Image (tube, rainbow, N blue to C red):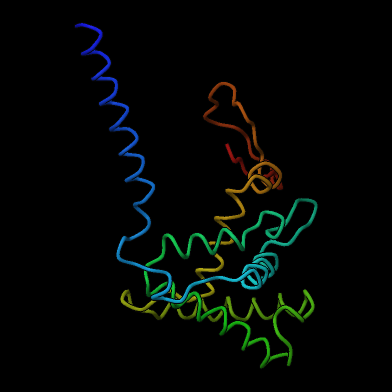
Length: 191
């Protein structure tokens, strides 16, 4: 094989890798979907609101909470890029529904109530979401709070603070150990 053939084959392999990566990365976003069709422009206030919801689900303790992991911004990206149009509408409407439920229960918006009131509200909505899931048909949309809770968990535990401080993390693991004793209270492994 001469040098010209080798270079053309390497270029073909690398080109396929780049094109394949592009197809993989764009695979989440259907090309016919436009954010303006669903009106999913999230504002900074929406992101702050989602951060507070996430922080109520995973509060800061001796480890950073969901707000420190910027879970609100993560949620908006996932909803815009990976959810279908129906789920996007349910999620966006759910943000409004949650705030209205808070106003009905406390007379204040979610952003204006105390952490204890937020926790009580989200606990009640979580119970409602579980009851909905138990009786829902497969064709029914997901409950908005379940989507928020799932995105909170995914966003937090895949973030740097979640993976390195809430979970046990070893940047470069050593040898494989198939069976490690687990003591009650130990953190789970991120790696």
